[in-house]
Image 1 (cartoon, rainbow, N blue to C red):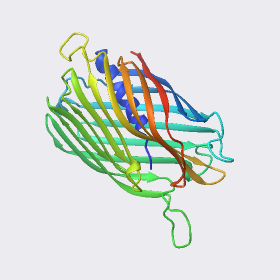
Image 2 (spheres, one colour):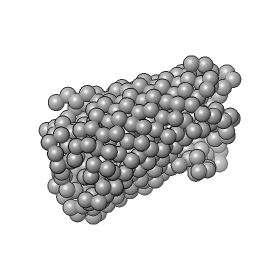
Image 3 (cartoon, rainbow, N blue to C red):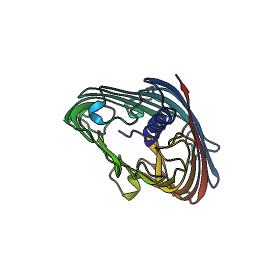
Length: 318
């Protein structure tokens, strides 16, 4: 299962929006955005829009959170100006949904992702779903540890001796969070490890990092983003973390499925970027250092250098 970092990014953007505006519980938001990627003769367009519902956790310790809601649904079609490879489709559709709710010590999680030229209707390989429950074994003011289990539904590449696909797989659910004046970090494991950390979260200059791994084929499978931020307004000031600028490095990928050929299709890229953040609006420009296409996990061509432009935002509806 490959649950895109884009989904988590938009969720975090929603949380930032709620904190910036000092919203009352709960908050309804409309995420939107548009990405343009240029890799030589290949041009890719990524519009995105959706809806989210969340609670404000600003300045709350883990022991003070009785009900926590993060519900998010995104639709993200993407299309190539020209066929990416010989006889491959130019248009794809990506659907992401996240239901992440904590009631006292009980954690409920529902994740759904579809990505293909024919999402859902193209078969098990075109979507993944996970339903999980966990219990907060450790609940302290600055530390939380949740352990549980989940069931995943997809084509995991596991077959019975008769050749039938095994569509349901039990999975562990692990979530750790730590929050101090020096750092804020979280670690999640469902189908793979995902780690995020902010160093000096209350300072004007801070470092953020996100690292995730869905596959284990090579170093290119490490999806990561490292950013150095400058926030001119400190968290103690009236404007809080309203604005910021940053520079960083990322290794990202887009994974989808081609229904007719029954093969996976992946675009990977590594880039240096600069970002301007107004909490409810984020503008990013990146210089692509290298990029590649993969068909069924095999590299079919290195596309070389290029650039991308990304605009992401949320509209808060109280």
